[in-house]
Length: 148
Image 1 (cartoon, helix red, strand yellow):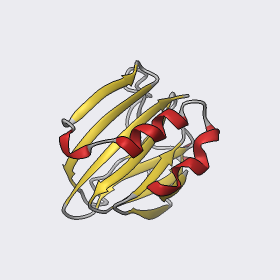
Image 2 (image 1 turned 60 degrees about the vertical axis):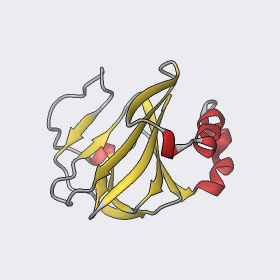
Image 3 (image 1 turned 45 degrees about the horizontal axis):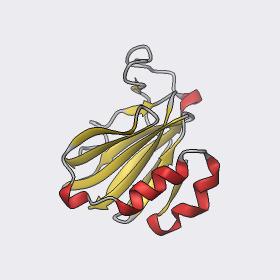
Image 4 (image 1 turned 135 degrees about the vertical axis):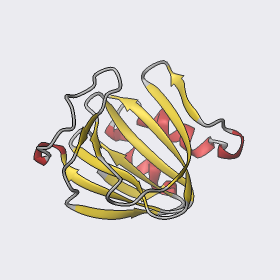
């Protein structure tokens, strides 16, 4: 997991061949004019999901993990908290891995919680199970999925 401010994106560009393109997209993204929902940017190699959503309680948030994609979550407006735990330590799957959606959900509790504040981003790798969107109020965020 990486958590940092948007202005520091370039520090991580060499970690994956598609990170530079994803980070360029994030820096130039016009959230105000973006439609809600998913969209392909570079076929299935880079996709986005524009979220304008109400936050939920810790009890309602479910741990999730992905095998084929890295999740880059960028907070444009509002603040949330997310839970985290190593995927390898999650042992209460709700169902088998869904390859079509690249997600597995767990009933495990997070090992810890971190804030994701306006102007910040977090990168979740396959080893990072996470429970996003915790808190009160609404957030506006961009989720960029980068194919491994």
